[in-house]
Length: 122
Length: 163
Image (tube, rainbow over all chains, first blue to last red; front, side):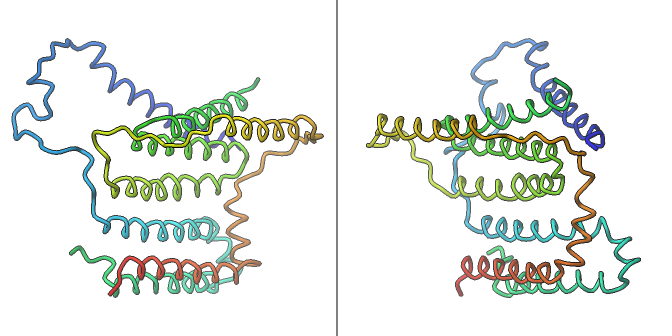
């Protein structure tokens, strides 16, 4: 059964090797003659001010929380979707209806979040 | 040592090394990214144990979701610049004794337990049977899960937006 994971392993291996090669080949083959102007963040542009560690707004956090709950919902749709053909042949429309109830109950929460202004970007 | 063991050790090494990096690195952003590698390694171990659905949950919810929250948590905080942060209390001796005792107990149990070695068929994909169970025996639990997620969603929305 693990043989079915071979393509995933191949993709992973290829990604790692390609990323390494892309990053380190320029270091390996390219000439390196740095000067202070070259090493600045923008060689020709406005000089950056402040630090890179700026605080971001809490609004992003709310969106991220809503996203995680949506993520968990999608996870539960997944086994249903994989098995849908057999289940539909066996039980008919009720399989669809039960998932629909689940989703409607769930989306009420998003409706609430929307009414509450959770998606507003003010 | 066959290929299965080799892949297991690969993922175990990724998990342990990145977990070590999480606690030892000074930069909290590096810590968060190493945590991603740890989650990923654990997902690989789940696959090797035949728990493919759990591996997908691990990847999508933890790597894709929880880690975003952690990174946002880091980005929301203020960085203290220019001064080194030290804890005042460093109880090295009691800590070493406690950890040593704990590790000793775990190791003793590990050595003395009569491990049963069973050879089982590697399970086929669990997702199909999970889908069947969710639509048959556990349909009520499945719908209740929707209600539970609804409560979590409403809680998150009402805490974040007080109007």
